Image (cartoon, rainbow, N blue to C red; front, side, top):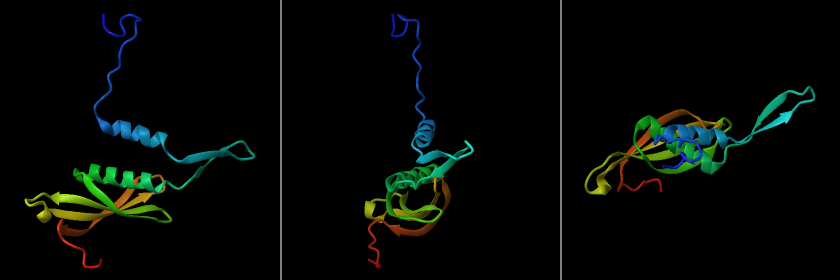
Length: 133
């Protein structure tokens, strides 16, 4: 007898796809609060998305669009509309690794953490030192 046959329940197998789980987790983790007005209507108020969550959302959504895993988030700043992040991505892997081609993308998120724009701002070799410091 397998698990579940004893009590008449069936096991539900979860999909190995990460996309639905991410979206569910994101919806469950949204940072919104509700308040009641004097007329009994529910009014939604938004709180600012946390910096660690904004970094994670920027990297995840850029990966979905480019099909390449981000190496790091090198900058993050709040804006009036949400967040702006610089995400570093490996574009072309070479041997030795210091000659691999990297790219820096500017990612713009809205207040809920959804990607609204991105652009590649720079390409460079991994071993290159930024002359600006």
